[in-house]
Structures are given as structure tokens and as C-alpha cells.
Length: 379
Image (cartoon, rainbow, N blue to C red; front, side, top):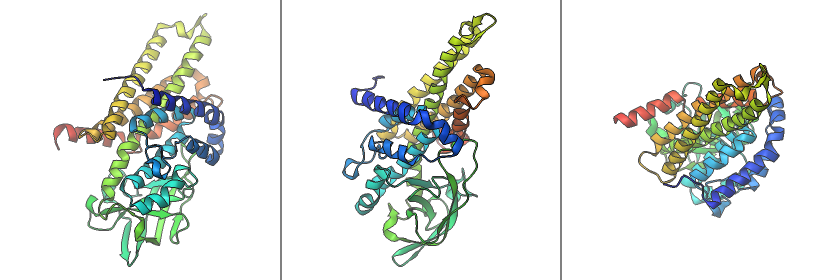
């Protein structure tokens, strides 16, 4: 076991850190306040290789590992947690097309996704199918050389803005075996979007319903084979869980670093609050939780990349631990800032709002416990 990053990984980390601090951090508050989707900044990130992190090089990807991605997303999240999370979702769709798509689909979609000339959305959740994703009801019936889609997807990041939608839709029997993955392109007749959702956080990325009414899509937009969609969606989520865990840790580390600086300056009762042992203990716990979650995340990233038998369980464990610890650390840092932490003049309240949803999406943490428990007990 080697717990140090190699030379290449340190280079990726440094590049992501510099980009986060120079291109994202100074603008994150404005993006949040104005609900701005930062298109140009995203394309600048893609120019550094972050639009297709683990997509093969022949279509413009960076061909990096899951561990590389975890390192990158932790750094990007320190610049803007919400925007980093959208980059994760975009990468998840690109990976699904790269891994399961035909050569024609790879050549058609991936070059523009890797540059982020086009943006991508992952469409699994429905109004009546959240944690029970296999019960989805969006349907695609075959009509000659087309699939005709009818149904709706909920809580879709990039909804209305993205150019490419990876849609999990029912082409066969009830349950997971009847689900397929079909790419629907923006502008396709029958594709429409709901109003932009008003959210607690993640305001730099739009979220909306995605609706299909007699939406005709060419059969060549099928990713993988019919009936393989649920497996593709779950494989994508293994990686997505790693990235969202990394984003939680990045947000937590950002807040902890700022809190330590604040504690060294803030004085009460004639002393720096950094000198109060009770508060030192809190910082010690925060640092320990972040480091422990990071180690588990890196272990899980290697397992997912190597397709180890326990990869799905480890990804669920890492997501559960990192997103819970991340929120708790950010919340604790806000507390140590007192009233100042509650003000929008300071970034901690924004990070708090952004990381809260990480305990819900990519599978709720209750579902993560279910996945872990079933794997441990053989159910």
C-alpha cells in the first residue's frame, strides 16, 4: 500500500487547485446569488481535460483513473462545490457513452462533450421513482428506425440547458431488466422542460423536469443493448458516488481551512478562540473525519477502477461516510464562526447549502446503508 499520490496525480491536483482558486472561487458567490450557469468557466475546465476525465483519448478524453478523478473533484469543489458537482454529472454521462456506446455513438457525441461545447445530463429519477429507480415508468416503444419516448424525469441537473440527455427508459418488462439507456438530444421534437426549480443550494447549475411526449429518437442513440440500461445507470452511479464524496470533502476542507484562520484571529474573553481547548478538540475531530473519509474514498476509487467484486459496496461506504462527514464538518465550521458564519458575506453558508444535497442524490445515504448491509449479509 502506498498512500502518497504519484507525480502525475500531484500534477493533476495542482492544476485543479490553481484553476479552482483562480477561475472558480472568486466568482462562486456571484454564481450562487444570480443562479448563473458558468458556461465559459466550464469550458475552461474542459480545456484542462476535466470534461472527459475518464473518457478514452481517441475521442478527446483524458483517460485518467477513478482515483485521479477523486483528487481532481476534491480540488474543484474548493472553488465552487455546486459547479464541481455538475462537472461530475457531465463526466458520468460521457463515461457511460464511452464505455457502453457504439463506435458511431462515441464518435458522434464524445468530442463535443469532452470540450464541453455540449453539456450532458443524467436522467434516471422520476416524480414517482426516486430511491426505487427500477420502478420508473418513462417508456420507449420501437417504431421502425426510431424509439418513441413518453414520460418525465425529475430533478435533472442541466435540465433545459444541456445538449445531451442520457435517459433511462422502459423498453421491456417491469423491473430493472426492462430498462434501456437512450440518448435524447436537445431540440428533438417532443422533448420539453419544466420551470427551473428553486433550490436550497446547487444554484450554479439549473435543475428542471425533463419531459417526453411522442419524442422520436433514432435507434442508433441506444447506448448498450436493450435491457442493459439499469446496469449502465448503476455503474455510472458507482463513479458518481465517488465524485460527490470528493466534492463533499473539498467543501469541508475549504471550510475547515478558513475556520482555522478565523480562530487564530478571533478573540473573546481576552484570548484567541484557537486557544480554547474545547474548540481545539472540535477542529481535531473535523480533521480526523475528513482524513478518514478521504482514505476510504481513495480505496473505493481504486476498487471501482479495477472492477473489484466489492466495488459497489465500497463506493456506497465512501459516499455515505464522506457526505455525512462533509456536511457535519461544514456545519461545525459555521458554528465556530458564530453569527458571521450565518451571513452571506462569508462563504461557509453557501457551502453548507451546497453539500446538504450530497446526502440525498446519487442514492440517498439510507440507500447507501441498504447497499452496504445487503452486501455484508449476502441478501
